[in-house]
Length: 113
Image (tube, rainbow, N blue to C red; front, side, top):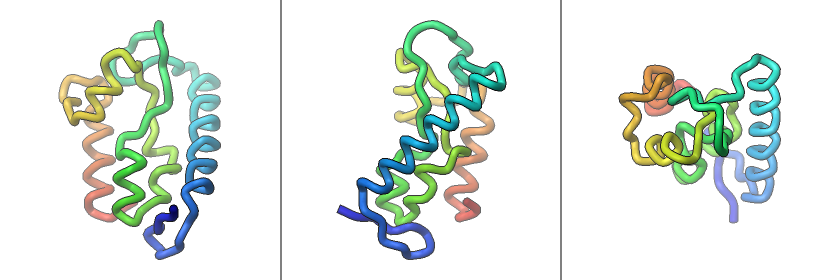
């Protein structure tokens, strides 16, 4: 299976997944080094906190903009208990980083990314 980037380059799913893993690892390490190893949406520091996407990998791939899936600006740290599912459902208005998420989504929708 393969997907296109916004420049029309066809990429295999395995390559995309590898780039995403690398971006997530770099992103998490940078967050730790910057002293931000907590959920950016609610501030919790306990439980499982992961690097998650603002614009889903599936959407990026299906929109022909696969490169956004490994763009670190599209990543955030979120707790899996509440905030990650809320982001996936679009219920983000109460998140501490809602403004950033909405601005990123707008930039994506306007093809500025």
